[in-house]
Length: 367
Ligand SMILES: Nc1ncnc2c1ncn2[C@@H]1O[C@H](COP(=O)(O)OP(=O)(O)OP(=O)(O)O)[C@@H](O)[C@H]1O
Ligand SMILES: [Mg+2]
Image (cartoon, rainbow, N blue to C red; front, side, top):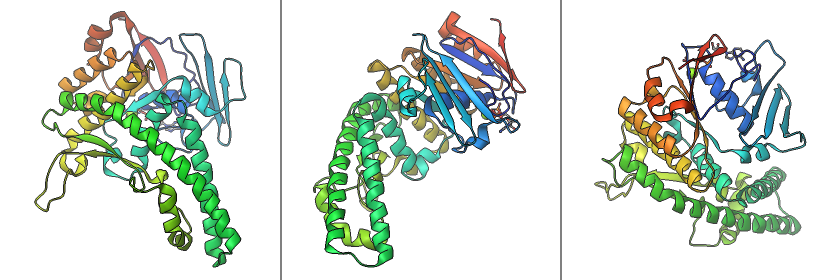
């Protein structure tokens, strides 16, 4: 790789578990970011490439060879992205993304639980993408139809009147949107059903005091009534607002605790109940159960763990590492110091590589 943030030209021989240690500002997160960019086409820190391309460089690139001898590469300038996969250069990001499920496990990412629905929906859709082959095509079509419908709603709102012909045209978009939305919903429900037992198992490991924490899907529409009917019923209000307020694009992954409150409300969001440290463990349970599900379906992950020892206590860190080893994930682990390396060595043995990062330069450390 070259030109990602402060990192110089880096060429690394990698193994199953790769531990990088170095002081604050040395480039640890940037290294994980590079791997993420290669597979996902974007950074987990910021969507704008200007942020992660070295400020003195015009471009950055990341290249990797997989154990089955596929070469993949991404080159980013401030405006453009070029991809390569084993000599082929006309490809979509989704083809690189599909090669390997890459995930960042960041227990400090509390907004995943506390804020809007977008990031939780993405978490679920990422799992759907990697486990259900048809998901991506349906998702893309749904996004396209939604965009068309919203464009038309907006222009009709501005015009202030709707002819019979325009209303009929809108109905065609609505029908397509309903069919695709129901399909997305169906896939999401199936995936949550498979994910749930693994998630509950991880809750028993990391949060045994909360046996009732569960996953569920909020569909974005009433599941008891056909989505087409609901869109038709809402059409006048959608026209007033100039956007589609109901459908699979509004879905949310709910993570709830088992509780009955004095006012009769049932099962509040787990984030309303858990402490800050417990929320971190909940995030671990979510991510780890995803990794295990993918592994069980023959898709071991590349897992990026940033500064884990600063976020979790020693017992939780060790439990996490043992389970990751069992999931056959390839690991990239960063830490301020080498304190975790003896434990990692006891698990991975010769499959552990240790590197030191110093001002954007990375050097292997011998065992
Ligand atoms: N576009 C850029 N070009 C060059 N350097 C950058 C750019 N963006 C950030 N940096 C620098 O990259 C350095 C490494 O940042 P990074 O977040 O990778 O450090 P880190 O090792 O993870 O630190 P910490 O332990 O504090 O998390 C920082 O000193 C930062 O100033
Ligand atoms: Mg960092």
